[in-house]
Length: 105
Image (cartoon, rainbow, N blue to C red; front, side, top):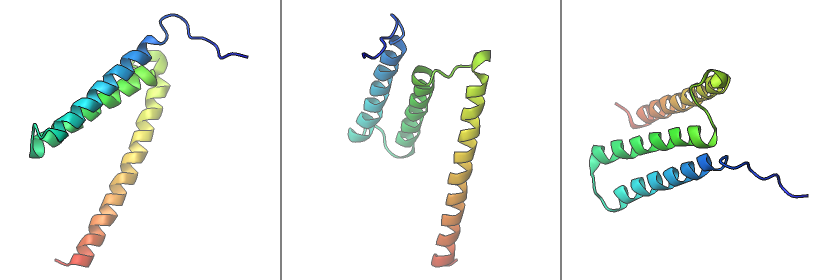
């Protein structure tokens, strides 16, 4: 039994997403390896490229858009992001508190 083939045009978002992801990854890596920017400016540019890549993945691979019919997917994504942010934030609070207690004032 063979795998079902994609309809014509269904693969286009995947190819576009793959190309954009590859381009954004190479841009961020090249920026850091070539030392084109330094300090905070490099950090902000790499974070911005990461955010654009995240949006590319949501749109091209997960097919999450702002249309009315995909609102439950968007709500699930926002809830998952909130849970992850709370877990990371709580971990950072505990680690900084532990660091301050061990190193003293």
